[in-house]
Each structure stands twice: as structure tokens, then as C-alpha cells.
Amino acid sequence: MKKIFLVFIAIFFLTACGNEKITEELDTQIEKEIIKIEVKDQVEVSTQIERKIIKINVKDRIEVATPRPNQAISSPLLVTGKARGTWFFEATATLLVTDNEENILAKNYIQTAENWMTEDFLDFTGTIEFELPENLSNKNGFVIFQYQNPSGLPKNDAAIKIPVRFE
Image 1 (cartoon, rainbow, N blue to C red):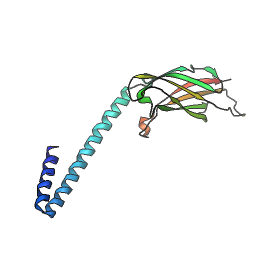
Image 2: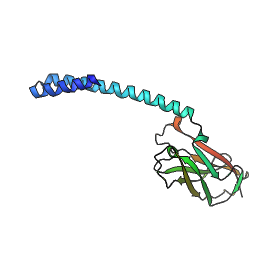
Image 3: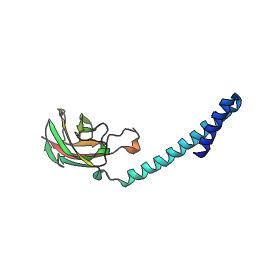
Image 4: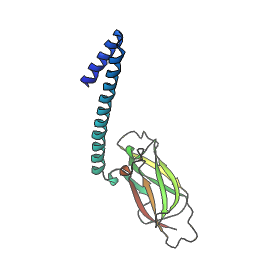
């Protein structure tokens, strides 16, 4: 950082003196230094993020109150529980109902009314309506609570699957 600061001072001084060629060379040097710093920061940040994700268990991030595992459910389904604020993005997270082969039957969102920009647990609720296909032979499925992954990176994906029975 000291190096960049000194380069900025030099550019200011040389610009005031009117030497454009030296100013252009210094601009290029500053861009190179900034790029080096950004790349270094990105590597450090992603390493920290990877370590944090490895250490955090999904069960430490979300607690589903309803539905309970293997509970018989019907549409519309009310879901409740608690999740850490980091589970949400803009106070919402994805909710899915799937059949036993994880074909999506419905998609909606859980929502918290609290300030989601925290690492504390927050209450959430959601309602989802679904229709069972007529040819559904297995009456088992899943309610899936997905981590709202704003990065879009697969390595940051997380979800909890609650096995359920359809009435």
C-alpha cells in the first residue's frame, strides 16, 4: 500500500509539472500494483471462505420445526423454523417440494420478518402449494430448504432435505 501511495504522489507531482510520458508510465505501474493486490486479496478471501464453509455444518445453520421428518403432508403446506441470517438473501431463501426422485413439484420461498443481515438464528415461515402427478406411484418425497447462494458458485450451495409422505 505504501508503494501505491508513493506512486500516486509522484503522479500528482509530475502531472502538475506537465510531463505526460512519465505520468502514463506511472499510471501503468499503478494498475499493475492494484491488480496484484486484488488478486492476492481474492485468493486470501476465497481460502477463508472455503475454510468457513468446511467448518459449518448445515444443521448449525437451519432448524426446521415443520414439517418433521416422515410427516404426512398435503397442499398447501406451512413450513416454519429458524435459520441463521446468512441462510437468507434479501430475507428470503428457496423452498422446494419434490417427489422421491427429486423432480420438482413446486417452488416458493421461506421468509423472515427480522433483519437478515446477522449470523444469529431468525424465525422463518413459508407456504407452498403443490400438485401431485396422477402417475405418482411412490407417495414419498422431500421438502428442501435451499441456502440462498448469492455467489452462484456450486461450492457454496447448501440445502437440507426433509423426507415426507404425501397424503
